[in-house]
Amino acid sequence: MRLFVILLFIASCQGLFAQAPGVPVYDEVGDGVDDPKLLAAFQGLRKAGGLPSLEELRGQMTRTKCVLELPVASTTELPKRELWKRARAAHLRVGWAYLCTKCDEWHLDLAGGYAVAKNAVATCGHVVQEPRNMKVGSLVAAGDDGNVFAVTEVLAMNRALDSALLKVGVETLTPLPLSTDVVPGDAVYCFSDPMGRQGFFSEGIVNRFVRRPFLRKKEAAEVVAASGVQPVFVQVNNDWAPGSSGSALIDAFGNAIGHVSEIESVLEDPRKRRPAKGDAKANRPEPARGTLIIFHDAIGAANVLSLVEGAVR
Image (cartoon, rainbow, N blue to C red; front, side, top):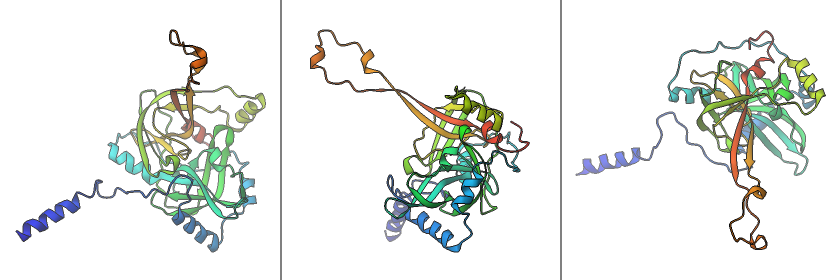
């Protein structure tokens, strides 16, 4: 009888674990709440010294090309569990740790990024933009396991292509190869932190490719002169939200085909609705604007490759 009770207790304890070995369970810190562990780790980096100054980082943001050794794209299809592992290993939270002008406290403004070399991370150009209320600050990167790294250099950046390459102070990142061998219907996966919800993995397909017209002729000339290409957006139906920007989209072979850039909700125009028969306009409440469709726009890998000297797009 005693043995039966012990076995029953062990079985009940095992049932508490819903995930396989090695799969993390994340603690939610809440929207807009700075992760205290990451802040403490950053403060350790800052006190140790060696972080580039804000003036140095600003000067490097004018660079549009760099030399970087990239891994070769894979052609071996992987099971979804392995894709999750690779996406998580390459994923970083990237952004600013900064002293606020409003409250005189340190904050984190992090989005996504992904390793493309042992010491280099790709992300969005808009992720590298300085927070409006920043007095002083440093660019930082953090792995999904909580390790925090200093961003030591902005290697290249093109805001119009919403792409940037950053060097970090370690040589141990797990890079994803970049690939442009993509067609609509291909499976695509994204590991990101939407609205601060860490470690969200989604599956979708490629819907289409979009090249948008530039709003200003000057902007178009600057982009072509700097990179030779217009930004190409890959539209997919994965799930993401603010905080996902810069996170990699990977294909079934474990290659990065681009990164999260934008999300756009198209709302219906209530003025175009037909009123119900006999419905007096004066008695109708203001109609709500329902969501017709949500477009998820990623920057294609070709735009990232345009920042690397000699890279084949």
